[in-house]
Image 1 (spheres, rainbow, N blue to C red):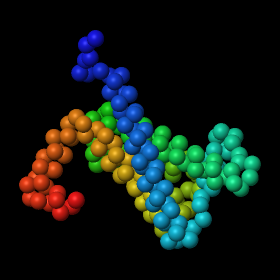
Image 2 (image 1 turned 90 degrees about the vertical axis):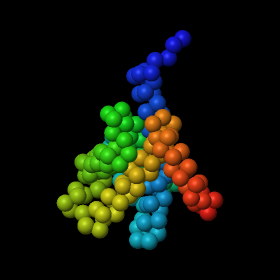
Image 3 (image 1 turned 135 degrees about the vertical axis):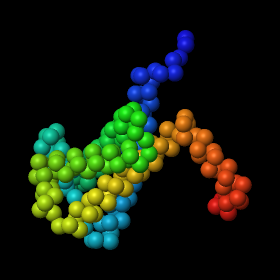
Length: 180
């Protein structure tokens, strides 16, 4: 069986698979970012996820213990699913920072529209500037981590030569030994 270089379904599957992994990385990063921020600001965990899932999927936790579990499950599923969007963005030809910027705009823009729609958060124009900045930072952490992860997974093709070249220069200058 001959494999074609331009296999559209193969490229789509690859983009989706890499996107899922990138979404997991992004979700891990935003989770850590939110945990650190909540520790600093003494903010309680948001119930926005629970409000939206109650309205859209008619799912409601039966007790306090289930609230955290359902919230985390939805948080991880949602973040992972957004990674697929990062994969699809790559199919347009956008790579690196431009793709990450589009991904950030899509993820945060969706949150800015959906959360107020389901009464899970006030509209952005009714939020305190500090809250908007923190929310934007968390979403930027997500998009950046997902972008780095996606680009690293995608490096097997066109980026691999760049990465090897950088490593070669670091090795030549002895920097690689100092880092290790």
